Image (spheres, rainbow, N blue to C red):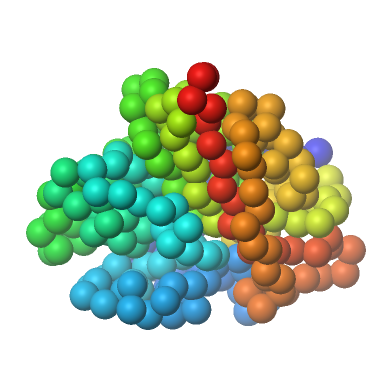
Length: 256
Ligand SMILES: C[S@@+](CC[C@H](N)C(=O)[O-])C[C@H]1O[C@@H](n2cnc3c(N)ncnc32)[C@H](O)[C@@H]1O
């Protein structure tokens, strides 16, 4: 009895719209914790030097997918659920002027924030596009690296997200993801709680199911690089599965 996809998208959009607009100044609506972190515990502070507080202050991820992406100058990068743009701006520094970074987000208020940050920073190799990660606004085989930070857990159709990521990547392209995963599953009743889903909790799925969906989409060499207990940022209630922040990498085969 999972909530319907349209309802999930609406609730998620409302939540992140409110955060971007400053209506809610925290990722968590209550004091019982959610899956979103703060930049100071997610990233090596040296990486964040020179980023404006408007960027670092809107860091809503659950890990650092940029450091494990091994980005190279000239590469084209796509960030799924780019929010205020922190990972796009970090990636832009690494791919340089000959590279390009596209952030996709479905929440208009987040896109406004990200675009405002882009102008403030005078960055020219980053573009933010409105769209859903289940139907990416990019052409086939056009991306070298896909990143995502605490977003795929929010999708009501993770199979479509991985299929789209596979479609968008060039043969030999790679993914670098930080996300919330579980060991075990939330009950159907817990998954029907759209508010908790939007807090990056009950939309999370078992890590083996997650990597299984990636394999089904065609990805190879799928590695769970690290998996950290997320109970510091998500309060685990009785009956819930164990909750982790994980980083996952994978490749699209050269022959695909
Ligand atoms: C937890 S925030 C993470 C933002 C950013 N990745 C970061 O690390 O700060 C989730 C973001 O994903 C976006 N989002 C969630 N579900 C989405 C979907 N299905 N399609 C596009 N964007 C989505 C939200 O609008 C929000 O900006």
